Amino acid sequence: MKQQVLIVEDEVKLAQLLADYIEHAGFQSEMIHEGNHVVAWVKENEPAMILLDLMIPGMDGLEICKAIRQFSQVPIMIVTARVEEIDRLLGLELGADDYVCKPYSPREVVARVKAILRRLQPVPEVAQPNQIFQLYPETFKVRFCEQYVPLTAIEFKLLHVMASQPDRVFNRQQLMEAIYDDHRIVNDRTVDSHIKKIRKKLECIHDEYEVIQSIYGAGYCFREPTLI
Image 1 (cartoon, one colour):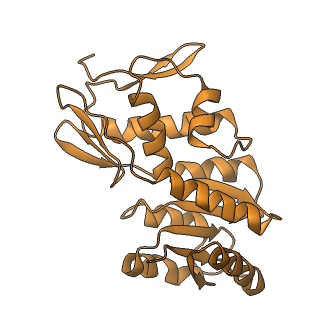
Image 2 (cartoon, rainbow, N blue to C red; image 1 turned 30 degrees about the vertical axis):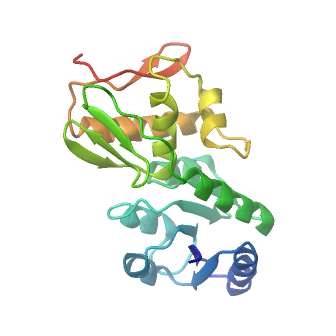
């Protein structure tokens, strides 16, 4: 069964062009041109990925992204003409997995879709002997202190990279290269934003464990959960 990609774009001709490229790449496409219908459609259909324009009539893209993240970790690629850094960082803070600015090449968008979905392929579980912390790649969840924490695809990839090599210090460039394997140029603050979100989710479960540690002047490392 083909994976389904939802295209949320109010420019009908552009949406159709993207759909043609998406389908040619072997995916099934669906188009929505108005924001108020997106959240309900996603709940009913559970697409493999969403291409989300920010500036659409009705509910805008950032609100849609925020609403979807309340119930789903489906990968979301923001596609927009708003290139200001604040929009880029805000989109990532709300749970977007990628960000492409207009004008763009449809081939590049398809390549990024493929890259993100490749990263969703199952990877070996990383389990700690004391079972305080365990990764579940098929659902992008972390079992932490007997509770399950949902992550976005990028958050899970970032955490898995570090957890695969406990105590190794990764600088920001190494982490960006690990999670964005298409070698795009990404602001250093993007990694910081993802780390902040992961920490916040884990701290909501238990704030006496420090899983991701900041190493001043060097980067970040994963520590097997121990009491601070």
